Amino acid sequence: MTQRPELVADIGGTNARFALVDPAAPTALAQQRSLPCAEFASLQHAAETYLAHVGAQPARAAIAVACPVAGDAIRLTNRAWSFSREELRRSLHLDRLHVLNDFGAVARAMPALTPADRETLHGDPAAPLTGPVSVLGPGTGLGVAQLVGDTQRGWHVVETEGGHVSFAPQGDEEQRIARWLDARFGRTSNERVLSGTGLSHIDAALATMEDGSPTLDDLSTPLRDPAQIVAAALDGHDLAARRALARFCAVLGSVAGDIALIQGARTVMIAGGIVPRFVPFLRTSAFRERFLAKGRMAALLEGVAIHVVTHAQPGLLGAAAALRTQD
Image 1 (cartoon, rainbow, N blue to C red):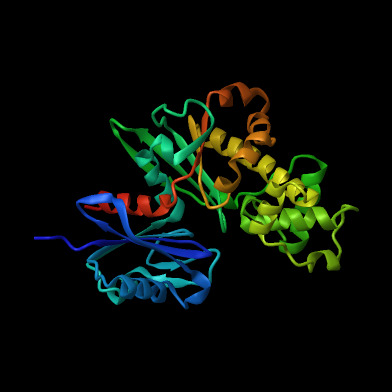
Image 2 (image 1 turned 90 degrees about the vertical axis):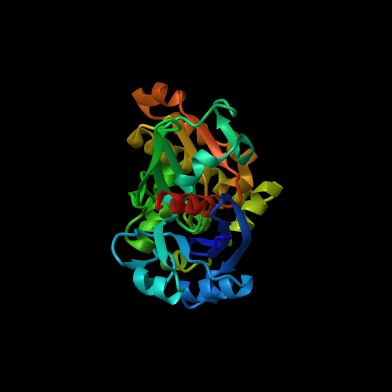
C-alpha cells in the first residue's frame, strides 16, 4: 500500500516554507512552496493554504520554527504567531506532529549535504564532516545550533538560542554601532547586528553616527532594505553599502570564532538566507582575520573547517530528517 506523503515546514520570521516528502525517499523534497508570513494570520492558516494548494492530507508532519520549542505553547521570536502543538496537530488532522527549532533542523541537514551544497571558505572541500560542528546563520534572525557525534556512531543536535547573546563590539566603529543600537533597543544582541535587519541597522548607524552619539532624529531614520544594501555593495558604486556589508562580514567572523571556541568546533557551517548571496565578498572581507583574532586560541582555530551552506532548503531537509528520528 502506498504511504501518505509527510509534511515538512521551515517557519521563519519572513517566510513559511513547505514541502512534502515520501517516507520511502525522505531526502527528496516535493511540492516546495514559500509563503510570505505577512499574508497569513497564523501558522495554521499558512499550512492549511499550502495543503489545499497541493491537495494533500498528510498523517505526519515536522515543523521547524524560529523560536524555543519547550512545552506545548510555541511563540515565534520574530513574527507575531503563536500556537499550541496539540491544537495545531488536531486542526491539521495529523496523527503525529513534531515541532523543532529551525536551526536544530538546519543542523540535522548537515550530514546529508554534499560538497556541491556548500562553498568552502577554509579547509578541504571534499573532506567528510568532522564534529563537533557549529551551525549558525543570519536570516530574519540569527540561528545557532550544534551538531555532535560522527557518521559511524550517529549525529545528535543541540538546539540553542545563541543568537541572543550580547554583542561584543571591537573597535571604535562597532562601539558606535552598539551605542546606536542600545539607544534604540536598550540592549544589543548579536542578532541585532547579524540578521537582515541587522545589516540595515549597521547601514543606518554608520550613516548617522558621525559624532558617535545618537539623536532622536537618528533613531527615526528609515532603514534601507537589506537586499538593496547587498545589491548596492556588490555593484561596487555605493561606498556606504560596501562599508556596511564589510562591517557585517567582520562581525560575523568574530561571532563565528566565538561560537567555535564555546562549542569546541572542528567545523563551522554558515547557513541562513543572507550569506550565500555574497560568498566572494565574504572571502575578501575581514571575516577570516576576525575569526582567528582570539589571542592565544588563534592557532586552535586555524584548523577549523569553514563552509557556507548553499543548499536551497536545509531547514526542510532537516525537518524531514527529524521525522525519521521520531520513528
